Image (cartoon, rainbow, N blue to C red; front, top):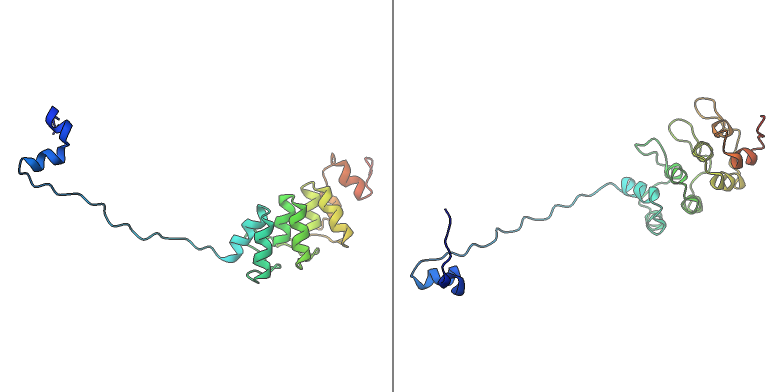
Length: 167
């Protein structure tokens, strides 16, 4: 049903005009607001997300509050140190190690952080891990050493491991 608005209703407003004609006008009130539902994620999931995004301040707070264990293997199959290496964030890797993350921590397939740094082409992280004593001879579950995972075109990593173009 279409309502025609006369000059009278336009100047007075429909509600005021209806009331002046003796029509009962009920005000429509907004429905009561439903309570806001919040979602709470487990600490490990939140922490893993902070590591992936390199949120150093929050990572530090979580660790200091003992809300996480650094050797926890997440559903991704990796620990926080592996996630940090895969993000390519050296500062995050340094922070985790400063708080006790193990440079030899293995993921569910036996990969160390050094395996991941080599596989994903992060020479700056590999150099740092090696400076802390990361063992380049450790093999993953497939029998691969970190140097076995270096792409042939990553000259910086090849040089770091003493591998020439002809090796």
